[in-house]
Length: 375
Ligand SMILES: C[S@@+](CC[C@H](N)C(=O)[O-])C[C@H]1O[C@@H](n2cnc3c(N)ncnc32)[C@H](O)[C@@H]1O
Image (tube, rainbow, N blue to C red):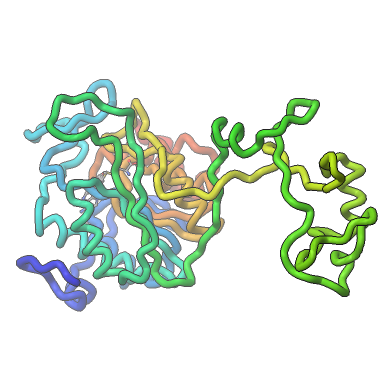
């Protein structure tokens, strides 16, 4: 299945005929971290051809314009407002619509795919108005088999606008991998108070909540220690003890086994020792109330993505980096990073935010430059 529209270039044309750019404003020369000001299409092509980065990027998070046909203003209270007219106080414009927008995005996605290593993933942030068309484009570029999730992101509190439709509190993040060898760290979501009351119903004398699980697991081990009798009890037929009898003895001494009235032992599992629950595909990470930049995303959201889909030392790229949220998140999690944005305001805000973190791995001269940036 393909989307057809006028002026759709072939993949070959995008890969071979895209013009390169002089990377005039690269901050971070000499280090692996780079903040580049410029149009991202030409910049990606230059990174691919002249910086030897083909198949070197391990994770991409992008939050492009959402085809709103408006201009994002920097207002006095630093929060973002959208306007239909352009003026001096514009942080960035978002005026491509329909097929022009889709083709703009598709060209960048094709070059991004060329930059991705075999273990890389890409997360694309978009909204419900254009997102379903973008999903089809992503299927084309990355292959349906590499589609992992359409994550619903709860972005704000419920709204009560008078509108003949339901309130909109979500946007979407489309998650694809380059191959099935993708990096995956199964990070857990913390239990809520409600989860803890539901899952850990029993309460220890000292107030700690716990639940119990059987001491045995399926499978016979007739020869091994876990198949032997413990305290005069054999594991039920077709099952074996979870640990050798000597270990069970130790657990019992430590008060970690609960005995029922009719003498059945079960293992105690405490809420405080549990790692949390499997993260599902609805995430609540609301955006900052007082953003540094219009449409700035919640840094915890980006940290969760980086933690799930990359390893320390690997390279994270964001070619619509805005105020640098992805770069800060990557820096905090000891990943290397490359950010690209064409807006002066975005670059200035990013420099300021980065200069506030100690030990950013910019080369010395650029770090000095950052400190001098006066905004
Ligand atoms: C939605 S904002 C990103 C916000 C960012 N996630 C943050 O947390 O601050 C989109 C950004 O894409 C940038 N942008 C749009 N078109 C671009 C292009 N062709 N090349 C480079 N940057 C572009 C805009 O300047 C804007 O900063």
